[in-house]
Image (cartoon, rainbow, N blue to C red; front, side, top):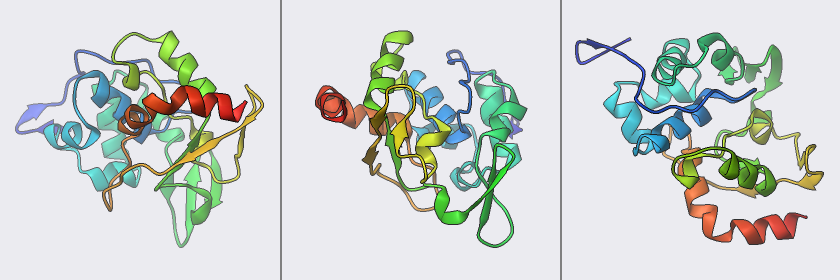
Length: 181
C-alpha cells in the first residue's frame, strides 16, 4: 500500500497482535499508542475507514504492516461481510446480526489485567477480544462474570475506536469491575 507516493512502513510504536484480535481493535490500539485517534491514524495513512470496517484485505494488511503483525492472522479474526446477510470470521460463518459492529461487550477484569501487562498510555493497553464483538458471548470464561455492554461513539461506515471508548470508561472501570464480580 502506498501513502502519498511513499511505501507504508511500520510505526515507531506497536503492541504485539493478540490471539483472536480483530483488525479494528488492533488499529485502535496502534493509533492510541502513537498518540492518534483511530480516525486520524487511518486518514494519515490513507486507509479508508470503510475499508477497515468491512475487513477489506488491503486495509487489514496495511494495518498489519503498520503494527508489524502477521497479516494472515489479523485477516482470520476480522469479520468480513459475505453474500447476503452473512459474515465470515475465524473460519466460521455468522448471520449479520451476530457480529456487533456498533457496540461491544467487555470484561472489566480483562481490561484491568491488560492495563497492568503493557507499557504506554493506560487506555491504549487493553485489546479487543473477538468474542466481545460476537452477540452470543455474554460472559467472560476466564473470570466467570457477565460482560458489560458499552456503546462507543461511532461514525457511520467506520469502525468504532475501541481505545478511545476505553479512555472514556477509565474513571468508572473499578466500579464496573466490582459490579460485574
